[in-house]
Length: 198
Image (tube, rainbow, N blue to C red; front, side, top):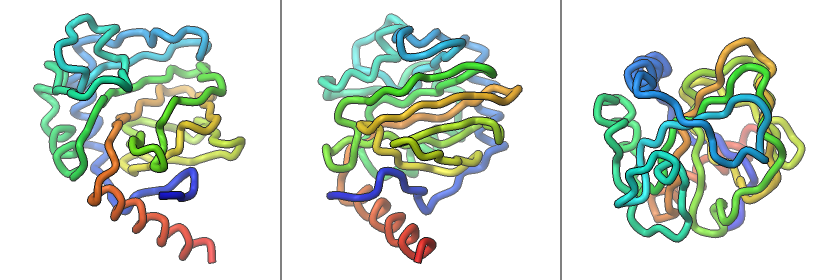
């Protein structure tokens, strides 16, 4: 399954309800991202689905590619709308995290191993809080993602993020396995992108 490196899926979620859940969840506290070499400033995570059997928060936020079983974490308990969002995705879900990039922070250009439709596992981004001065680059080109949208990004390609705004940038980040349901959504998004660009 070869397709373009970015696709906006034909689904939209309620930004206000996502923010309400974020307010409930973040009271439990954020954990600093453990790969310090990949960023400057403040980049932090709350794990909502994690490898089964992991209880240390650092190991919970690591989306272990060799893990075959992921389970909901206690952080997800009070987030009823986020649970609805995840349930609306018809594919098997692996790691799910809230990821916050503070104002003035930068995620340096890097690649994420085996995260592409072609390789069978994809990463979806749903912005919960963002601002016009967030600069997300994929293969050197900017991707503008608005609150409540759902984006597939081929993150096995080089990508980076700079939050040049004055507010946090928080995304719901979902790793999903490709199955027929997801293939249909990606193909639908591909056709829409072709239509918009023709």
